[in-house]
Image (cartoon, rainbow, N blue to C red; front, side, top):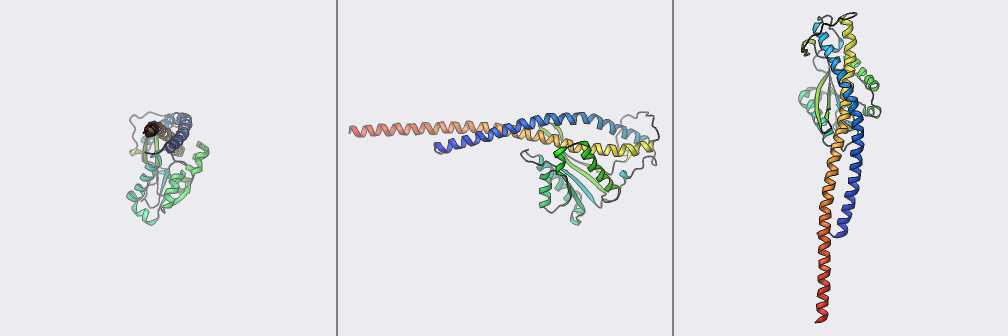
Length: 293
């Protein structure tokens, strides 16, 4: 059994750790409330924009619906947008995204992987550091986007990616990220970004008779870039919100585990102290008996 000093040192250490994890939990909870409000307000706008796109595209002729963002070719060069966090202590949040990114590169695009034709746009230092160490081609590191996350900064990045796709530098652009469901649950998402889906691939339950001005082609040319930038921003914002939820949950569990460990150590300390006192009493009694003899 460990001596009393060792147990007291461990109890003090665990209590200090519990204070840190409890503080991190409170910080993540405050950030989560703020971030969650952003994603909740964005979702109806993004959903309505997708609905309008689907319905307008469904009534557009093939010539009207033409857009460079719908160019479909053989997947010669692929850009994989991997969204992780800049910091750890958030459970399996980063591990799941990195594992899925590796799976996509090795199983879905093995030929591109062998030829170095699959590149990584790393948003988040955890994903960037892991993939770079394993010789994945890093197109760019945009981890600093979380320092001041806004639609304007993300829109500029999305515009650059869209321009490179139109210029033929990439044939596929795809996302791997965590989508926020609630504070305790994040959904791992692997989804295409470019090329955009053809009209017959978009689900539309009900077609609304829109009055379109000036014309369908002009509306589509205006809506598609806007919709893509919203989709890009929504993916990154989802990951950012999910990160705070994952960290809050992780720190909550760490705090509970620390409390449980402190209880166990306190019980162990009390038993060791009781045993020590008993031994001291026995020594005193034995000494007294020896003096009598």
